[in-house]
Image (cartoon, rainbow, N blue to C red):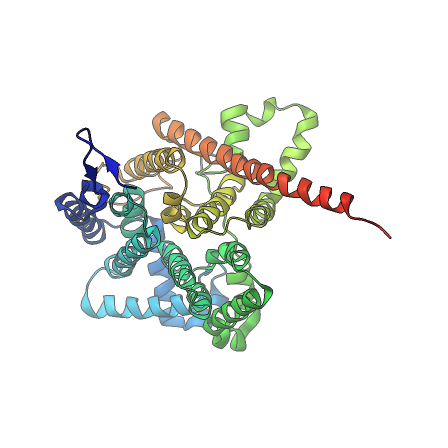
Length: 427
């Protein structure tokens, strides 16, 4: 029903500024595009851009499989590594810096992610505001156009899969998600939520079979040639715990345990064993908790709730593992906008403050120009440490909160099922 103004005349929501693409919208779109162009063309990016140049050079000169064998740190899927080897050859021939050619497609891909987000927001009256908020989101800009890695592709293929699923195109949806694994593997974390969203085991099996077949297709030539090296380098990689030479951790529960709560030498003896066990196994624990969350939320069948579940899955992984790099936030960033504002607003502000202040520190200037020097900064300013601590604490608390809320949501159904069993006539 349309709202009424003070003079009792109906107000058409379509006439409100936030319900249409007015001048404000296109100005923000232009701003987001300009900032991405600036970062792609004028900055060098982080160490990741340099590492990709190293990988691309090696794959181009040695050949793909020989490079995997020569460098155990070559952990990217074979298709994207082969493509980037081609990008390196184009960079050499054209004399355009490799970081520019490497980052430009992923900055452009983020525009596709923005369009998909707009489509998924559907009838949401705030969809123009939320779409613009993502496009000018400093975190989205930094991770897609500045950082220099492939992680923003995860969000694109994930949203593409969800969008196709919303149109009941199960084969196309599964294919999109499977193709995403040719570039980066973490899209697989969303598979349980997507499968459980479907109703009926026939649809679920169809989705899984198509997803698996398409994903395998991108790895098949390399697997046929040398399955062992692909299994070790690519499938065996699950992130690393990153810290400076001064012992400052980039992310993870160890920040909570050893920086926010107490240094390790002040922990009670009886707590040391369980804490060390958790720190040693937290990647596996995070995956199990993420799967549990998807399982508990399978009754939420509306499309926005599916996007919210996927956001929660990635927040859970983020909150419970040390094996986390800052660019990994790109995996689920668009899905944050399907969670309540009291999550995505502070999450965006805190994470942006941490990521930007750290990049400023490591580059030595607020424009992020010059060399990104992680090794040369073993100790960070107190402001960066404070932003890191607040950000880690925020995600740990919300990861726990999402799990608890999902369990509490499941309890009434469990009690109802128990009551039905108890009242069923026997004999």
